[in-house]
Structures are given as structure tokens and as C-alpha cells.
Image (cartoon, rainbow, N blue to C red; front, side, top):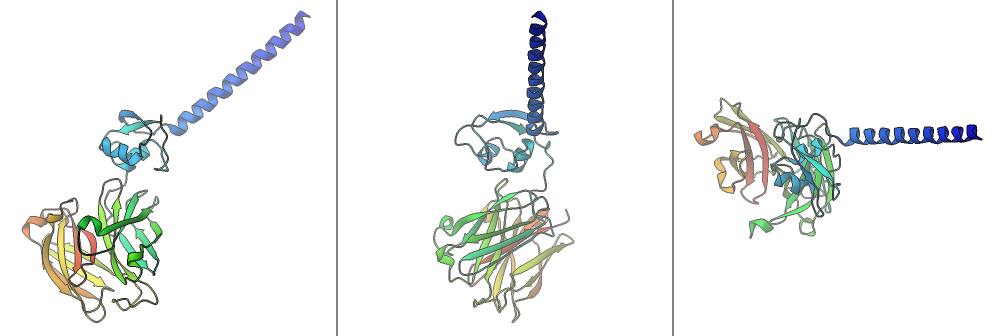
Length: 298
């Protein structure tokens, strides 16, 4: 009888030990999955109801990308009340550049109802608000409308198809801007209506231009597929600036019958000091703006 009791007791003990081992293994596994790797935290934050990762990043003056990577968050829209977040110290997270590099490409085309976007060589694993210019007069804040988001992958490539507002249904050309959610950097291009439209550029390829700076003072622009026989103001400013009055007009250019042109301009001294410039072409007739970025070799 005692032998049976001892056997039963030993069996129960073995089961308890096995359960304890399993629970410990699960706990270790969960910790390994959720713990940020090689990131030094300046503080921790407990998520509250109504919080978003973007709001938390902004409040703690870190980028959205850094905050997501520090906490191994792959879906920036999925956080939970009560969740503990590591707020990374500045410079401890290995993130990609906040600016598109010099070979970045942003193209846009549209039909009557849909806008198609494609970017290459943009900041990796980043999210951008997509805004379109729905009118060119009146209150500046009401000229633009947010219609969705675009997200890049680990290679800095992104594609998005978004529904256009009714106000742009019959518009052949308009401005499109991407605003990086993490740092508010913005890049813009022009969308031209695709096959079957009376596009002012005369073809179905997206309008684009490249810019380069030589010896820190000479800006050269090469454009293609712009509206034919049209004139544009050429404006520049520091890429980091958010001041609408910081733009400096350096000249103007006009396209020929094929919508292409090459032109060079002298940069004013006050903008030569900047390492990276935003360069924009503004259609004098329609106010449509097409922008890119360029390094000045600083």
C-alpha cells in the first residue's frame, strides 16, 4: 500500500516539474520574441487607451521607425493599452536614412477614379501620408486632401493604389505629395492622367525631372514628359525646412513640343551652404508643383 502511495506521489511530482519546465520555456520564448535587440532605452512608457505609436513617438521626440524597431513592432497600427514600450535613446537604433537618397524615384499616374503610386530607393520600412492637391486657390490648408497611405518595404520600395476624390475625376494633371509620418519630410511629384485622357504632356509616361549641383553653385535640371510648351518657376530651399517662406526662386524654364528641357541656374549664396536641397518646378499657368531632392556635395 505504501509503495503505491510513493509511486503516485513521485508521478505527481514529475508532472509538476514537467509543467514548470514547460511554463518556463514559454516565458523565455515570449521574452525573446518581444525584447528589443541591442537597443538602449532612455525610459519606458505604458500604452494608454487612445494612444497611437505616432503620438507616443512625437511626445518622446523619437522617430516612429526607431520606436517601432526598438520594440520589434512590425505593424505600427497595432499596440495595446497596458503594453510597455522601450523609448530608445537617440542614436541607438539602426534605422535607415530619413530622406530619400539621390537616386530615389517617385512616380504617379491616374485614371478617372484611381491614383497609382510607385517609389524606389525611399526610406526603408516607412509609412507616408498621401495628399493630393484638390484646388489651387483659397485657404492653403483646404487645398490639399489626404487620401491614404503608402508603405515602403525593407528595400525602400512601395506601391499604392488609392481612390481619387470626386473633385479630381476630370483633372488631367495635379500635384501629389508623400509626407513621412515619422519625421514630416515631404516629397512631391505630378500625376498625369493615363490612357484615354487629354493629358497636356502628350503621352502616358509620368512627368519627372532630375537635378544636380556642380561646384556647390550651379543647379542643372533635366526634365521629361512635362506639359508641352509650358513655363515653370524654379524654386529651392533647405530640405529640412518647414517654413513656407524659405523658398528661393532661382529662375524659370520653358518646355518645347516634346515636354522636355535642360536648363542651368546659379544658386544664391544663402542656399549654397545647405547639404541637401528641395528643388521644385511650379507650373506658372496651373500652379501644379513637381519636386525632387539633390545633394550639394557638402
